[in-house]
Image (tube, rainbow, N blue to C red; front, side, top):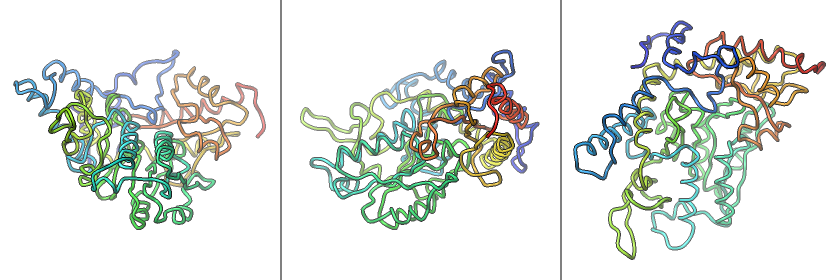
Length: 434
């Protein structure tokens, strides 16, 4: 079970120390130093309750779901669908609006290919709303992860639609004036990230969605960096579709989700076809189930979904608003501390401006990979590279950066250890001056 908490008060250092006891991996040493794990933006660690839940499924309930009438198959199906209900409730959506996917990337590709399927040949009347072609535009932003950029590039290449993007300001925030100009009656799809995995910028999702709907565009939200870190009500945001990845929110790899408004999912042409998603099959044609099974061909990620529900219960028990506030405070510590170190350039908003609990930065005169290796020698795990956001780095004049990202199990003391280590990077490599 998750640790006991006081939902009426903010998270405290004492509580976070209790939380850390639920994550055995954090107790180890790396290169002779206590592990300081600051790479949750890439993948989170897993609490004991999540790992035990998945193990218990295999030990006690393992069976194919939706396919058997025997007792074990019924038990497996029940817990599988109960898990869908748990995760759907966590996101403020209905059960039939949640499609299991392998990850967020799979969800975005599902949408892009399904839109493509609605753009060619004879399609049902209800699916025509998703079709794109010459003269249509798909709009993204300059801060997108490649997973929310490349599938749309490919869709445009297949259909003749045009890809447009909203630029960012110098501080990494979205140019809202440009957004208003670029959202036109030609815009069929507007896909954007809720939280940048590089700058920590939190985009105004509700405002952007309203702007898109005003011109008749469908909205696709990349919630990979928001679903694990803040309370989400996707129905209240009014986005048409959204994706998230379980491994970033305490769950195993191999599980993610696609949210879609029920009427849209039922009208959307399927992407993968085969077993488990059909009603009737003849040698000439097939008819398909309604969502979500319509998009879950083949063997589903059963144990992973069950474990994701356990992860969601852990986060809910802790309190998403409390987690967000704790991480936001850590993020501000990261930024203000980095800004005080000579030769460090922090990407994104300056300290004091709201951001997610992460900070990417450049060390003048030292390549990001060297920075990462130096920190790793001290037991500090960070991410280095372009973070699957090459266009954003290019806009900021970089090919790579170093990123520290926090989660509910990180402490102010760990941030202090990290900042002390970063301050030693340039002297170690013999770099001086600005």
